[in-house]
Image (cartoon, rainbow, N blue to C red):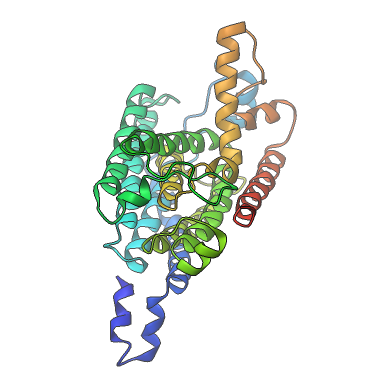
Length: 366
């Protein structure tokens, strides 16, 4: 909404700054951070009063893990409300609300956030680590993502752009027109990313820190994709309305920093599926909006590694009866190897920073 203040720059010169996405991105980041920090304390107290605590796996499920994390039982969950609320409010204030990419991002954020909230609610009320069934969760995620992608596909001003497929290191799209296959393939990016972040969210601040590096990288990509000069110079796909996505990324960055204030080890609150499913949905949709879906494999390398560890573990056990890792997702494997939780978190953060830097570097390697 604040974007429209630039229309009064004839009367007040300083209002012209609201025309620029860079200024509004900084404003969205700061606002999201402050909202998270200011209201985070109240949310934690409220969740504690309602006894909305995180169920921890029992010793019967995983004995060693129960020993390591048993003390976390009862820590407030559903803290993702803080992230979703801060992002949406900040974006509505600082971005152009009529922008189609912003509309789809908000839709995916709220849709996956509500799904995660319902999943958390079932876990808390049933006092178990099981919530919404896997099939229902996947179907719901795909339906939400399908609605967002289909909207961009059917719009005349975004359809041609959304149907292209780019890969890292290539100057031109490898597929200039995926046709209706785009509607079938692109939602998989959102679903996969949503579940990957969900799997990563197992240690204090782990998923939050990796989110920050990924969001920062995509802030750069989305800004360049919305700038005709920069995108032409770097051979990146250009669309004049994608620049607003940088504001959404900045809001996610600010909200993530604010949440990390309370979520760092030892965590006072967990994001729960409310946060992890919505964050994954946001990142997947952001990648689609700036046409860097494949690059998400590099930038979000930690998320990919966590998800792949689960896939490989399940496949290996079903085919051979043997496990590749001591436990999946991957962060639990290192815990069971004897690494302290803080060491696992810090090293995964370092890996995520490296992945983000490599991803950004690919802009010039084309």
